[in-house]
Image (cartoon, rainbow, N blue to C red; front, side):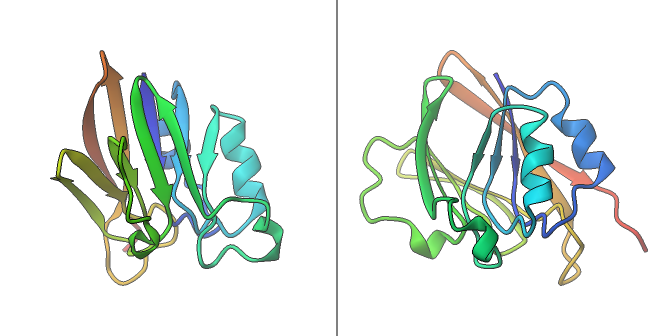
Length: 151
């Protein structure tokens, strides 16, 4: 199973990101989408799991602030800002979050914490990143994808 994990697109769905979405079995977006057009475009590629970010305003009122789901035998919990994670993550294998625009990946207490960074407009001189996850037999492999940016 191939997952493409995004966050902080801020209204921009780059062609390089769209190319990565081809063939995805599911897309995870950790918030700050900024426009319903991006949501609809993402839904055209694969099933979409999405949460609302701090910049997603009235149009996004129906998007959840956090989301628990299972894919490929793994239990996921997704929020925009990791400060909003619940205290009880029992049974969760992977936490996906965004907000900081910085890629982060670490295992704590047997749980993978993954921030795919931002693949929207470049801000704060950060890299433009997303993550691809391959799940096979209940185990996952994550690849950080760095996209080129304009000078």
